[in-house]
Image (cartoon, rainbow, N blue to C red; front, side, top):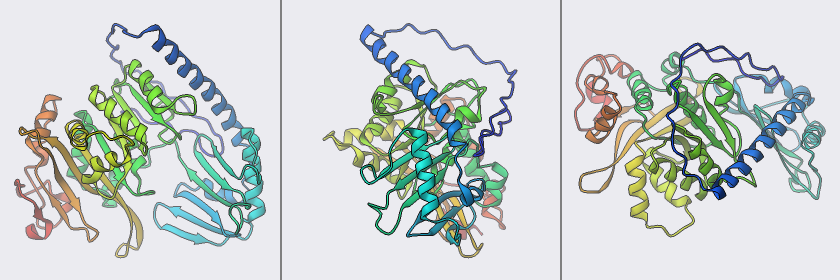
Length: 434
C-alpha cells in the first residue's frame, strides 16, 4: 500500500497528491444492459452529484474562513473527536484517551456559538432563527449541528464532530494499546484480502467508522471502491487520491436506492456504506451482497451476533424474518463489535474489538453464527475455531487462515497467542491456558 497523504486539515490546507507508478489492472469490458429510462435516471443522479460536489468544494473553502475563536484550539487537536456545547456555557469534549469530560472555557459562550452558527448559515445560504431553529452544516472534515435557543430553552446547543481525512488506526499502536491482539488483527486483514463482507457494530463514539476505514485501507489497490454516505465521513477518495474511488452522497434527489443502482453500473469491487440505520440502507446492503459485490459497513448494535436481527428490526416491510436472516447469514461473513470504555486499571478511555462473529448457513439450510473471538470488560479473551464454511470461502479466494488458528498463547501473554499451544473446536477461557 502506498503512503497516504496528509489530507486537508481544519485550517483548509490542501492535499499533496502522491504519484503512483504501480500498474493497475484494466477493468474487464462488460456489455451494458441499461435501458434508456435507466440511463436517464443515472445521468440525473450523476449530474446532481456533480453539482453537489462543486457546491461542497466551494462551501468548504468558505468554511475554512469561519472564525471559531477560542473553539479553534479544540478543533485542531487530533486527540479530540467531538465537542458539545450546551446549558449556557458548558463545553464537553470527547477524546481518544480520556473519553468524555467537561472543560472550563469562559470565552466559549452563547454569543460565540450563535456567531459561529450565523457564519455557517451564511455559507450555506440558509436561515437560523425562531422560524428555522435547526441547522446542520458540513465541511470536508467537520460536521456541525445547532439548535436555536427558542427550542433549547436553557441556551443555544451545538455539537461539532470531526471527520478527518486520515486513517487514525495504526497496527503497532493497536497492538500496544490492546485494541486487538495480533492474531485477530491479522485474521481481519486476511478476511478483507479474501473479500469477506464485514459489518462493524458498536455504540455511538466507539470507533466503528475508523475501523471500517482501517479495513478498507487494506483492500487491493486495483479494486474499485464506491462509498455511499448521507453525511461524508469516510473520505477514502481524499486519503487515497491515486486509487479508483468514487464518493457518492445521498440527498433529497438521490436516495440510497437510486445511488445504489448507479453504483452497480460503476462496476465496483467494494461498496462501503457509512452506516446502516434505515430500511433503505438495509435494502442497499442486501442488494449489494446478493449481487456479488463486497461490502464494509457499520451498524448500531450491542454485540456482533445481533447484527442480522438488528438489520431486520430496521426494515419497514413484512418480509419473512427467516428468509431475510438467511440472506444475511449466507452473504455476510463477519460481524465485528467495537467497544469504547474507561479502563480503571489503565486510567484512560480505550477502544477495543470485543467480538468477532461469523455467520453462515449450514448444509441443513439453518442460519448459524459462530463467535470466533470474544473479550469481556475484564480483559478475559475466549476463542473458537472458524467454521469449515468460512475456511472454504477464504480458500476459494486464495486465502488460508489455518496458521492463525493452530497456535495459542504462551504461558505469559494471551496477546501473543500465536506462539504456542493449540486451539480446538470448543470455547476455552484464557484463564484455563495460563
